[in-house]
Length: 330
Ligand code: NDP
Image 1 (cartoon, helix red, strand yellow):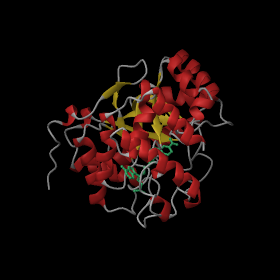
Image 2 (spheres, helix red, strand yellow; image 1 turned 30 degrees about the vertical axis):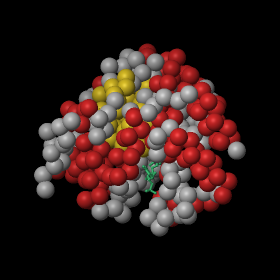
Image 3 (cartoon, protein in one colour; image 1 turned 180 degrees about the vertical axis):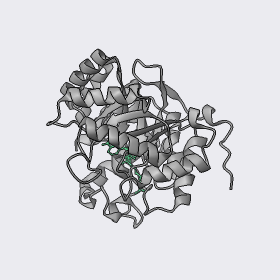
Image 4 (cartoon, helix red, strand yellow; image 1 turned 120 degrees about the horizontal axis):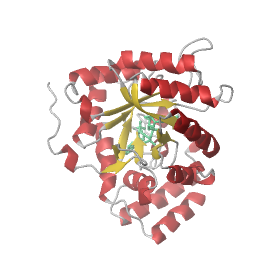
């Protein structure tokens, strides 16, 4: 069946400027790390992406090794681009990354120029694209000179493979160094992609969040829902279809009675705010404009609808923030 995007999609989302750039990103972005490999029916993937775009979610985040197997999420998204989003390329922000293990041998991971450029070419081919909007160094490589990794990103932009560049999970110090090198090269750093949620605050402790604000670099927070823990789904046990039950990246051992106690208290607060817990967790990441966009994942279209609804209430009182801090510390 032919997909026609909802006409009112841009009335349903808010768009936030990414640092000091010309680019705006939707407050909620969709990541294809899980649920886009060969373990998920193609129709489900299509439905998730269609629902996202219908809600004004213009940003889709990928990486070379999303699957399983590695590369299959990009292939699936390439098909969706052809089947459903043909004619809409200029309304989409598509990102990919290289940094983690992708292929065998010494050139298939980390941060060399050899790996980054080859991987970017492979990603473009799998998605059937001429360029990605954002290309990331997925992790800092302690053995490759940072200059080499940044020069590779600069080259990726100058050669037309990407419009903007980003870095992911670099600490505050490395981020400052990267920004300085990129400034000399003439390709500014658009965006940083760190993990961040109510239960994981390393970007505050490390100073990264303040550093990004100071440097005018935008930010996209991954795992804003702590992979699903910051939703109601685990309150009654571990559902069979959940990420924690499937031996994926979420270790069921982390879902302890005391963690659930905190989730229950957060859920009560979310209800008082007139939001679902997932919505409040996303709003918290976005509070006071500190993070440009929250990067969610979804196994069903309904989850995307719920998450996009976070924009209905992005403001917190000082009391609510203090309450969240108190619960998170328990
Ligand atoms: P989230 O914290 O948003 O977790 C997503 C999971 O939470 C879903 O798969 C689903 O779990 C559950 N969920 C989502 N919405 C709801 C809802 N409304 N109600 C109930 N449950 C819900 O983020 P992810 O861990 O998926 O990461 C998001 C993206 O971030 C990735 O796709 C990727 O693009 C990026 N990322 C980047 C990394 C990096 O190193 N740069 C590392 C990790 C992620 P279930 O499947 O159980 O239904």
